[in-house]
Length: 440
Image 1 (tube, rainbow, N blue to C red):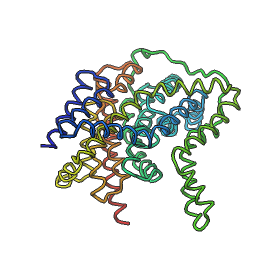
Image 2 (image 1 turned 30 degrees about the horizontal axis):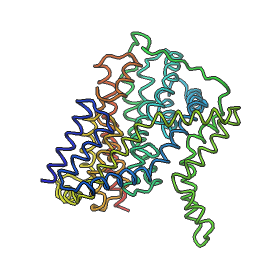
Image 3 (image 1 turned 45 degrees about the vertical axis):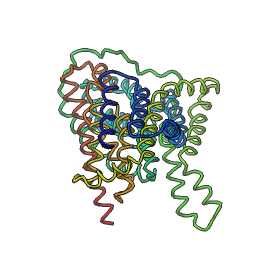
Image 4 (image 1 turned 90 degrees about the vertical axis):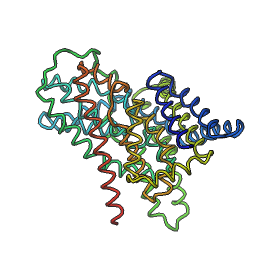
């Protein structure tokens, strides 16, 4: 009975968001209240559970996401993303230009949210396509494939970061495993798949006219790359420092301090504010104004994350998680495949990869605790599932269609197929990685 209640509430959540166009946070809030009441929770315990869910989720992730938004805005506004893209274009040349674009999306996609990265990189795509007289889809698809994969698979992006923290996954291992899985997914669905569109003729200019000009000095390529990767560099350094600091309490304390994602993000933002901002002549006042705007851009993402935390906590506090755990453990499907299927179904219904991943987290959480499978693999399985089958209920689908001036059929045959490919390849990679980890 309890499982029926949960499934019904999830279906109603999907309908509220996808069919009736409710605000995602309000939909989460209403469904969480309904679910708790139907599961027999008292009014007092239900409200306490909702407060705890929001508090615990924000307590572990709020600072990271806010600092990440500020860092991404700075990397974009400073021209660092442009510098990386233009340098890689010069290094690779026309013969390997799609590989260059994929590599650019890979690097830039680490710190930037997908929508931000899309808007920043589209001018580069169009300028390269114009320079080499090649199809925009052929040039752009590899870069956007990499950008999408990094957004779906890896921290510090919102869904991956929340999942890693909720599942108690090691962030460095999650990132390393994610890169191992992301690379073949990007290669196959990016440069290789893009060859299908090499001879496509662009029938018209893009609907939205963009410019590749950047006001002010552009930072050097080394500085741009270091700033883009700075959170990962700091956490990786802390991990290595922890390995060599045995018996030295000072070094161990420093390693533990630097390993915290909030500290790594803060230090990265401080360093980048100096190297990309103040040293380039920007005023502190202007930097702070830009950071304030970046937080406004992610306010709804934060609310959706809070909403997902509510639902997860109600499922946990009502003891429904035990029923879910028992049902999933009896299911004949492998746990990682089941996690992928649940998330992929939510992605098809809800459209947003972030919302799909966060919604799936509460349902999948019992699996993580009871199967003995490394939690990092569950983070990646959910991340892969969250990219499956992007279609008309996904804003990224329409951004790709309108910028590249495609028909619906062309968008399905390019964008939707690409997203489904990286999702399935990601799942295959997770399953193979699980086997390799066990063999050791």
